[in-house]
Image (cartoon, rainbow over all chains, first blue to last red; front, side, top):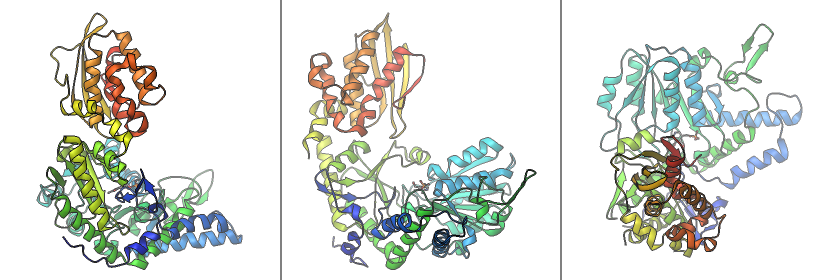
Length: 411
Length: 152
Ligand SMILES: Cc1ncc(COP(=O)(O)O)c(C=O)c1O
């Protein structure tokens, strides 16, 4: 198979990522675990240290120059993030620690009015972060959880979804792109159908924002959660997008500084959105670094990023399929850049440990998606995932190493 | 392939992974303990039959990686006929060996086949795999708990 032509200079891009320039177990590092977290370019790393070197001051809390400077950079980032996902206004962007906290915010705040009469629909391919918060809410309020089944191909069973939707459905929470199967879900259809019965929709966009053009207003979802670290930004920072009327109606999530308007002995009034939901000193350096990550993506172009990751993924699937005894989980028509697989009779731990000896980093385990593992009838899988700094040669190395794994363990 | 890795997966481990010994359900066990490694999903049930304070039979079933399965298999062979005090002793010895606190050369005569797992000390991420069945058997003979985890 000939390798397709990359839409940008991959070798030049690789030079932007210092971490890639190392050996692991005496072999050049082959990093195929971007779905867990992406690597960071120099510009992002430097923006974080430059913030501490030059600008460090608390935001929204001072008249002095450093406070003004850091507040400006912080709010500029919020605007970049809003623009990047088509949010309309930066008022719709609430900073959180990541996707997980964004979803917990919705479960705690928006979910606070749920009762035993209400129903929530989630799919069986969710990451635990879009599963457990709803179970907790169900335990707190008695509301009922219903599950969208997965088809053979690893897609959502949309016929069965239609049957789950009723007047009682308050919320539908689904992942945009699965971190295990790679499936891209038909979220616009899900949103339209859910809105028809009056239900709100939360989309887990942790894996989609780094890879595809997202326009939350076009999708028309009510909530959208995502993380900086999956898109070359720092760890510990992410955001919730939500529609303005919902944010205005929802009670605060955490209480503290920053989120108040007036505090008296008798009670407190809330700051305007988004600050009402941002109690305490935020992760300022993280927010600024995230903005720089978005600049980096914009310089390359999200469409080119998507096209290249897609080329690598298709190339990998084609090559992996030639290995006898290798099963790939998920065969959706529309798919992202994560490929989960198992080698017959070799446990994923042993596979990934072997690959690590060759300098190849893949994920092995349940990928924080145990209900999906149950559906697939496996304990764990291997997962290779691809991004702009990976190469076709790296895919070849993976495939060759997997053939050696087979020989080693099945002797 | 580097030497430590080769050493870790010595013949004994590959062999016990491929054909695990005492891998069966036990009729009328005195104790059954489920051992789970929440991080990676290794999951075994360990069955123990006691005759006074002697382990007269021990078996396991379940699934997991080569290290965890071979360790369970070698362990069942090793512990049959041992007393509860000895289970406790070898549980501790094994743990010290795979965490590198005890040099295998200093206990080779005592640990016999268990020495095959000394290489785990080079790979801290695999310690939980190697000790899972041991945690389960230890829980079985020292407590009333029905579940053991390597987190304890
Ligand atoms: C699909 C999906 N949802 C949610 C998450 C959780 O994101 P975070 O750990 O950044 O909160 C992840 C990442 O692990 C993910 O892949």
